[in-house]
Amino acid sequence: MTALGFLYPGHSAEDDYPRIEQLLGSDIRLQVVHTDIGEDAHRVDALLEMGSADRLAAGVEELRLSGAEAVVWACTSGSFVYGWQGAHDQVRTLALTAGLPASSTSFAFAHAVGELGAKRVAIGATYPDDVAGLFSTFLADGGFEVLSVRGAGIITAAEVGTWGEGEVLALARAADRPEAEVVLLPDTALHTASFLPSLEAALGKPVLTANQVTVWEALRLADRRVHAPGLGTLFTRERPVQA
Image (cartoon, rainbow, N blue to C red):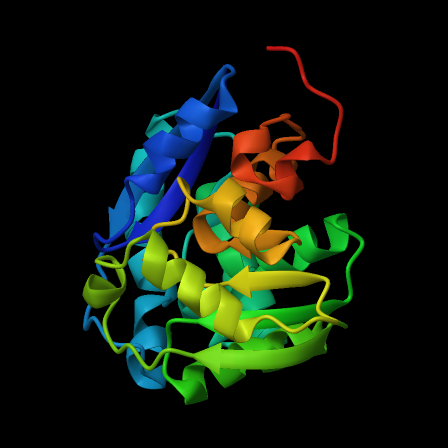
C-alpha cells in the first residue's frame, strides 16, 4: 500500500481524488486533508494568506497519522503566487514541518510538462487575468515557453467547482494554440478527473489539469509510476507498475 497525502484548500473539487484513486486501479490510497481557505478569492493577498506556512502546518499532523509517504500542497494559485523561488521556500518549509517529501501543484505542472518532453504550453485558467499572468511568469521562470494565457475571470473557488465538462472543454479550446505542445488547466477547484480522455481527444494533444498533476507529483515523490490511461497521456509515459 502506498499512502499519499494532500493538503487541499476548502471544498470545491476534492471529489476528484476518490475518482482518481479509482482510476489508478492499484494499491494506492489518496488521503485528503482540508486546510482553512480563509477568504475564498482569486486575489493576490488572499492567495498569499491561503498558502501561508501556518495554514499548511495545521493539516500536517493528520496526514502524518494517516501514514502518508509524501505530501503535496494541492493548490496552484496558492503556490505560484509566491513566485518561483518563494514557491520553493514554501515547499521546503512544508517538507520540514511534515518530515516528508513535499511539493505543490505549481511544481507538479512544471515537472509534468517536463515528463512529457514539452516546452511550449498554453494556459486556460479560471482565474482573473492578473492571477493567470502570475502562473505564466512562474512557468517562464521554470524554462517553459507560454504561448497563450486565457483567463476566465472567476473570483471564487466555489464558483469554479460548479463547472462541468462543457465549460472545461470550452476553456481548453479557447486557450489552445496549434503550436502548443500541451494545454494546462490550473486550479484544483476545477473538476477534471472524469473528463481527461475527452479533453485530449477534442484537442488532439496532452492536457494537464491541476488535480491530475497533483496526484502524479505525489506518486513521483513516492517513486511510484502507475499506468492509468483514463487519467490522460501523463499516466501512460511509463510501463505499467504491478501492484
